[in-house]
Image (cartoon, rainbow, N blue to C red; front, side, top):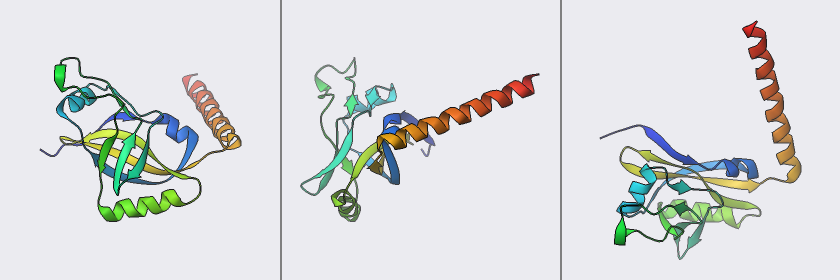
Length: 154
C-alpha cells in the first residue's frame, strides 16, 4: 500500500527557536502500542532532540503517551528511541553537530504509507533579537492579510 504523507505532529517550537538549515527523513524504531498511540496523535515533540550514541542515532525527550488498551506492552513514554539512518548519514550529521552551535531537532513525525517517519532538522539556535524580528514580520503579514480581507469584504 503506497499512501501519502499524513502528518501526526509538528514541532512549532523548533521553528521559533532555531534556523533550520537542512532536513533529513529517517525511520524510527517503535513497538506496536507506541504506533497505535501515535495514530491517535499522542505524541509531543517539544523539547526533543537527537544525538549520536555508540555510532547510532537516538531521539531523546520525545513523549509518546501510553496506549490506553496496551496493558503490559506499554513502554516508558520518555524513553530514547533509535532512528534508522545509514552509517554515512550518521557520520555526516555528527560532523554538523560537532560544528559550533548546530543541533539535531525533530521537526515533524508523520505516517508515510504504513511506516512512521521522523523529519530531522540540522538547526542553528536563534538569538532573542532574531525571534523578535520573526514575530514582528508575522504580525505585519497578519495585519496586511486582515486589511486585504476587510477591503474585499466591502
